[in-house]
Every structure is written in structure tokens, then in C-alpha cells.
Image 1 (cartoon, rainbow, N blue to C red):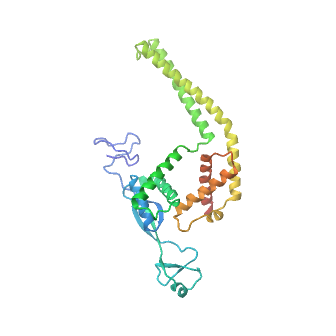
Image 2 (cartoon, one colour):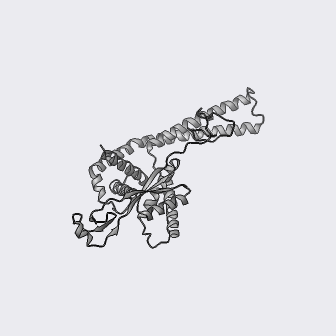
Image 3 (cartoon, rainbow, N blue to C red):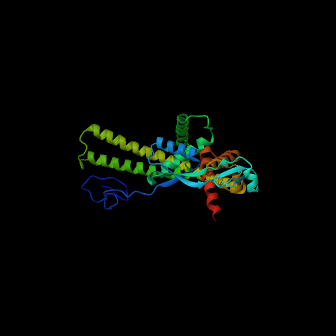
Length: 313
């Protein structure tokens, strides 16, 4: 039996989810697959699909999304499925005199809806890695091995450099301070009541000593957390000022049109998005030495998202 809301599985005989109160069902409804990437050509799509499956995602589906749009300098021949290099304004007769090359198709990669977030992380790493390497000379096995190694390296780097603002650190430490302090005081009171024979949970001196030491340690941790929170609170104002200056500079300096100059027409859109975000990050690091790399990474993604959102307004 399954909860249609929490997606948890329960033993037979249980009819209502103890968490949310929903009635359990025999099977969970299958959600429609979602698109997580658009690749240019079957070769790249197959590499990504194989890599997703190697990372544990099953039921990866490829769907033909139609011909890729013409690039600058290409002209359509009489056979619609082919393009040739040349001036975009060239006539069909002139284009037909040149050797045509097959035009690639856009291939969309679909995964199960419940695997969307996991798949997107792998897709982002895939395009970042693939953009930096020439895979034509590698075997399929070597390609997969190279991608797996660099994905692992990229994930390790990211896990050790996730940006957390001073405000978030202040809130986290303040919350921890209250939790540990209150729990420690309550524990010492409870231990004292046991010593006074109000409760009889503890019966030996050893239990009293261990309990008292443990709850006293909680209070110490709580006090340390309050001290850290106070230090982070002092940093909030200067950090926010630096962010505001950086965002103002970005709005005056980097636009969507300027980012298009670094786009690779032969790369997938996800790969170009990563390249643009990295470009913004590099510019931040060049002009704002006080901003750390993990913070620059977060600011770059935030600003690029802002540009894309404002594009449709």
C-alpha cells in the first residue's frame, strides 16, 4: 500500500497514511516523464542517456525534437533535410552547387518525474565536462570513464564549496543555540528531579554523572552557537553591501546580448548556460576580490536567472 501524497510504502492492513492522513492506494499513479535536456544530434543524446543510466537512472527516453535551427552562414538546399555552408542570403541554386551536410536534429532526453532533480544535476555536470573535452578520439568506454571521473570530482568540489550567506549562518547558529541550551537545561532539571526521587529513571551514580555531563555539554554547545551567531550577525551588513554593489555592477556591465557573444552554436543550450554562468562568475572574481569563489558562483547563477526572467517581461 502506498500514500499518494507522501509516496511512502506501508504494510498490508494499514489503510490511512499516519503522516498526512491520506487514504492509501494499491499503486502509485505513474507521472508523465519530464524533459531534462536538449541535445544536438543522436551521438550526444546517446552519450548523455548512457551516462544517466550508468549513474543509476533507469527508463531514460530519447525523443526527436525536430531539426536544429539554422546557424549563421548556412543555407537550405533543395533537400530540406540538408544544409550547406555559405552565406545565409545565398540562393538555392548557389547552395546546391556545394556539398551538403546532414543537418542535426534536436533530441530531448526524458526521465521519470521523481528523478528530475537528480537527473538535472547529472546533466549539468555532463555538459560542463563535455564542453571541455574533444571526445572524437575516445572510445565509448573511455568517454564514460572520463565523464564518471570528472563528475565525481565536480560533485566533490561543489559539496565542499556550497555557499551559505552570513545571514543564513546567523539564523542556523541562533536556532542551534536555542535548541541545545533549552534541551540541556531541561535535561539537567530532569536529572535533578531524579536525584530528588521525584522520578526513578536513574538509579545509579554512574547514570547521574553521565546524564549530567551530557546535558551540560548541550548547554556548552548552545553557548558556543550563540557566540558564533553574534559573530555572523556583525558580518551581515558588510556582506549585503558587497552583494548589492556586485549586483549593481553586473546590471550595468553584463547583458543577455553580451553573453550571446560567448555562445557556441554547436553546443546544447544547457552547455551554453553553464558557459555563460561561468563567464559571469569570472567577471565577479576579477572585479570584487572580497567576494569568495563559492559566493561568486551563487551570485552568478542568481544574476543569470534574473536576466532570463526579465527577458520575457
